[in-house]
Amino acid sequence: MIGIAGTDEKAALLKSEFGFDEAINYHTTKDMTKAIAEVCPNGVDIYYDNVSGAVSDSVHANINRLGRIIVCGAISAYNDTSVPQGPRVEPFLIRKSALMQGFIVSNYAEKFPEGMKHLSQWLSEGKLHAAETVVEGFENIPQAFIGLFEGRNKGKMIVKI
Ligand SMILES: NC(=O)c1ccc[n+]([C@@H]2O[C@H](COP(=O)([O-])OP(=O)(O)OC[C@H]3O[C@@H](n4cnc5c(N)ncnc54)[C@H](OP(=O)(O)O)[C@@H]3O)[C@@H](O)[C@H]2O)c1
Image (cartoon, rainbow, N blue to C red):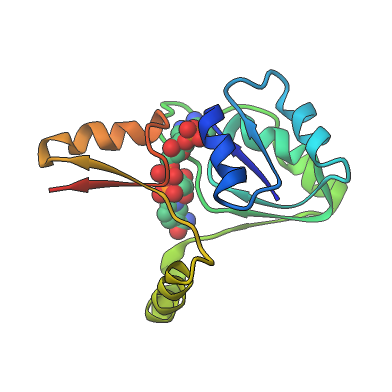
C-alpha cells in the first residue's frame, strides 16, 4: 500500500503510524509517474483518489489492466476558476480496461450507525489509527478551512470552539 502526501513529515507518518509500505512526497518529487512506477514495479491495482489533478495523472499512467479507481475527492481542483486541463483518463481506462467509479459517503447514510460502531471499536482496540489537527477558537474557522488547501492539517482538521 502506497501513500502520497505533501510533506516529508506526513510521508513518514504514513509509514510509521498508518501501515503504508511506502510513501511519496508529491511536492518534492520531480517525476511522480516515475516515482510511482518505482514503488509499484507491478503497477497499481487500486487507486483511492482524494485529490485529482497532476497526482492522479501520474497514478493513471501506472494503472494496471482491470485496475480500479475510486474517486472520493478532488481537492486540487476545488479552487480552479477554469476547467482543469491535463492528461485525460480515458486512454488509460480504455487500454487497461480499468474501472473508475465515484464514491459519496451520503450513499451509505443508512449504515452510519453500524459504521460508527465498528470504527469506534477498531479505534479503541488500536486496529485503526487516526490523527487530528485541532485549531482553537471560532475566529480561526476561516484559516483552518484555508489550511486544508495548504496541507496545514495532519488528519482531520477540527476547530474547537
Ligand atoms: N466523497 C465523499 O463522500 C467525501 C466525503 C468527505 C471528503 N471527501 C473528499 O475527500 C478528500 C479528503 O477529505 P478529508 O476530509 O480527509 O480532507 P483532508 O485530509 O483534511 O484534506 C486536506 C488535505 O488535502 C491535501 N491537499 C490540499 N491541496 C492539495 C492538492 N492541490 N493536491 C493534493 N493534495 C492536496 C493536503 O495534504 P498534503 O499536505 O498532503 O498536501 C491537506 O492536508 C477531499 O478531497 C474531500 O473533499 C469526500
